[in-house]
Image 1 (cartoon, one colour):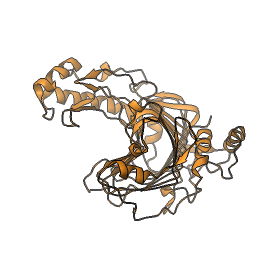
Image 2 (spheres, rainbow, N blue to C red):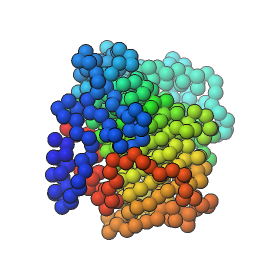
Image 3 (tube, helix red, strand yellow):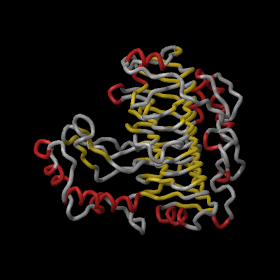
Image 4 (cartoon, one colour):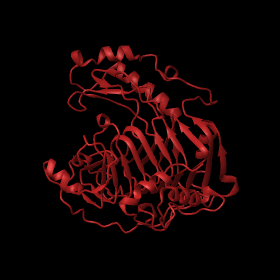
Length: 427
């Protein structure tokens, strides 16, 4: 069904491609597995998730309590969790709605917090003291409800427009598949003020829509990630009161991951691969493939990479509001990004040299890029040359590796049709 719909979409656009956007999976979509050459998650043992689940380990869930029980049950055994409808994360153990006020520690209030840590009086010192401790307790109260761990040998699959709202799926195991899900508005009621973040300080929050923390062999496919339209926040201390963190972060030594055919949109800090510059558990890991995804109206981190060998190919980047845009590819410390055949739609006010940002990295492979300015005719752009012409120090071209696990590399001119027709959940 997916390939028929995709072929029909291409026919309307007058285009023909030969490869299906995802491996066929018969009548039981939760038992679909990653193809044998589909990116880093296909390495070594491959990624099958819960495909081998016994009938008793196949669950259909419609609310948070059921999802939590299904994920926690029978640890390590293959399991398939089908999500139906909208599951709200900000609820109590009986699935009754909870507000930020319900999570708030008695010692915390936002007005008191603002008064205590106003830079005019607090200065540029790390926040500390009873109010910060009460904020952290409040945040922990919310985390206990909205963060659900996904262990090994698990597939979570959405049925008919399934949505996880205000929830974080934190993948900590090996051999996990997340497919056909809508992730929306994982929001933090209790952001922390950090006076030392940047020149003017910043508000920082917890909770990604999906978070891979020490996970291995993970396939994230045909999902949608966004703030759910809930991105209007006030300004305090001259900075936006940011209640959203990442859409999909891959951190803490995660490894062998494929991110394919997803829609990530209307968000700032989108995809972080590697969360520290310190050479700890990330060295030799963070091997990730990012292909055929739509990054639409995202401000930055698409992705930002530290340490990892990351293959970024056949993605569509759409920038509509230059005021909300910072960069797309973040070249972090010891990163080895191999970018191929990506397509950028940008306004004239965004120069191609801005598509890449230096974050202490030294090298970038970028070939086959097409750029369309103000919806005009696409033209080839040498991203590395554009970056080096506009910035110092220069980045070198030799990343020291060449991707081998590639199921099919499309020409950049075909990427808009392929991605717009094929990315995101299938209903």
